[in-house]
Amino acid sequence: MRGRAAHEASLQACLEETAPDFIVLAKYMRILSPEFVLRYPSRIINILHSFLPAFIGARRYQQAFQRGVKVIGATAHFVTDVLDEGPILVQQVLPVDHTRSAEALARSGRDVEQFALAQALRLVFEDRVFLCGNRTVLFD
Image (tube, rainbow, N blue to C red; front, side):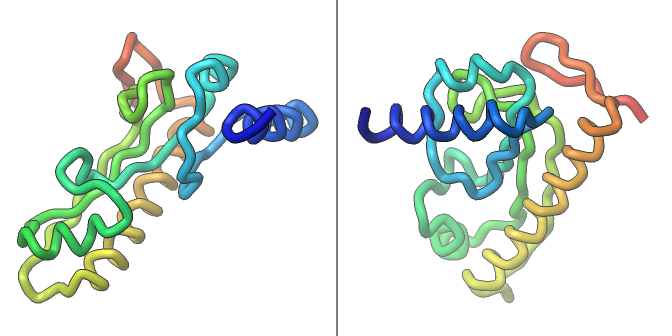
């Protein structure tokens, strides 16, 4: 076994040992196979910068800076077998302006991602999320 299959087999062995309730992919930076994802329905959570699909790749904040974005944000969602299209848990945005450098945008982006992920995890851990197809209903 090589590549993704070997990595996922190793990951699966670790998960079977620890039996987590949820799996969080923050900064994981790998695409899981649909087969792997289907083993954990509604139990894998990911966080994305909200630039998708406008700015992709490693230099997304530099691209955003060059285009003069006015907001940055993050989306926490359940992972499905369709990349980045799972039910949304939380979205957060932060207004920005021309005074922010690309580095400042990246710092602010990390902050908003952390906040959105923490909020999403709290909702999930407190059992305040109801799945309805590809949507979520959040309870106060």
